[in-house]
Amino acid sequence: SQGGVPARRLGLSPDGRRLAFTAGGPDGVIWLWVQRLDSLSAERIEGSQGAVYPFWSPDSLSLGFFSEDGKRRSKLMTIDASGGALKTLCELPGTNSTGGTWNRDGVILFGVFNTPVGEIQRVAAAGGLIHAPLKWNDLIGGAVHQQKRGGNRLGRGVLLDQVFPGLGGDG
Image 1 (cartoon, rainbow, N blue to C red):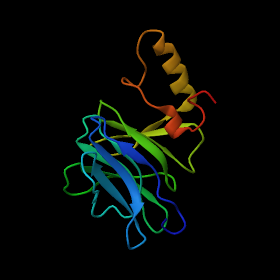
Image 2 (cartoon, rainbow, N blue to C red):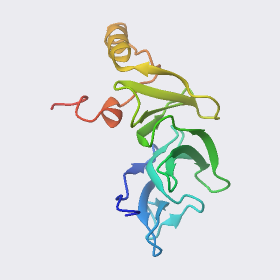
Image 3 (cartoon, one colour):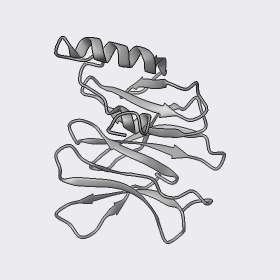
């Protein structure tokens, strides 16, 4: 843990070849790590101190995650899965994230603590301004309406119980 906050989450790449996870290093700091499933060792992503809630791009070529600094203010960041420079996409409007997902249309959806209940934030995977948040009621109403027509309003789908735990399953 870092400052009493446990390491959070892991993410399997869509191609099933790599696992991204957060764990403390020998220095006690939480880092983002990536391990190929055909390997016995993981690689630490340099510059990823304070990483939480990693998630993959649909093509498994990039990773997204949230990075908390000492003030518990989060930033949404990405990195090429083969390495390279970290990219900050945006600073979150609340104190920290509740997780995220990256859709095939190049949009990252995420939840944020200390924002109005029922909002899902969204930003282009290339970075930029956070778009007007999606509202839970609009999203569910649109998803139910679109499901009858064979699609959903987000274009490719989103796992809602990652953003709103307990609301997406059997109870």
